[in-house]
Length: 242
Ligand SMILES: C[S@@+](CC[C@H](N)C(=O)[O-])C[C@H]1O[C@@H](n2cnc3c(N)ncnc32)[C@H](O)[C@@H]1O
Image (cartoon, rainbow, N blue to C red; front, top):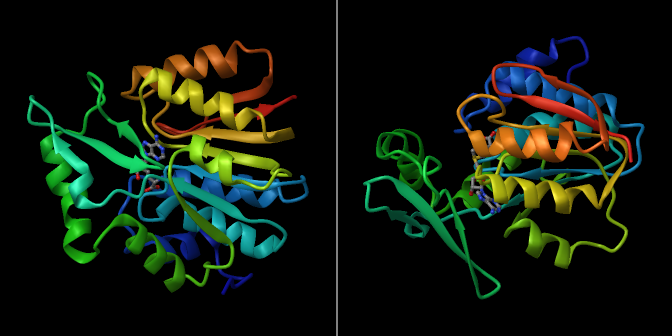
């Protein structure tokens, strides 16, 4: 339950303290703020790439305050057996969605290093059967099960199942990081953005050339967005003009 007189940054820190993930507190505060201040726009929020719910909880706390929308959390929600070792000893992901094999982190430079896998990913599976169970647990612990709607799949399967009237006032893209994947994610999400909607990216202008190229070509130079800004070390935002 939100406490209006307690700094929201403290409340977010407390809410996510046990949730594994990669979003630092400055980025979570910005996600909260954009979700909070865009509440007067029409539409829901979509997150592509939720993992255990760390960033989703920050946005969910804003949605809880305004009470007028949902956060769709689209993720492959992999189980441990969905991770495969590459010939280089790194890890990539392959998840069966609607009889399709959806592959992520498979291209050169985008695989998950073995060290990162052992440190950040394997421990989640010691506590939970899969990341969907982890997500549901952390979301319930924070009282946000009504606001946050998980969807196990990729964007293609999500839009096939989404209501025909879906509108988005904000989207946070943090899924597969290769250029073609991010470009496709932008193309799909854009169909649902209302004018004035915010699009945000994790891992922008940091270590992922595919994310940078997709942002440069399909956001900055597309003529469809304004107010572009790198906000923190790896968090980029832009506003959809329409
Ligand atoms: C870096 S994690 C997300 C971290 C999360 N935003 C947080 O704050 O902790 C990336 C997530 O993207 C998901 N993912 C990767 N490729 C995907 C795809 N094509 N469709 C849906 N989810 C995908 C992975 O399963 C993983 O959970």
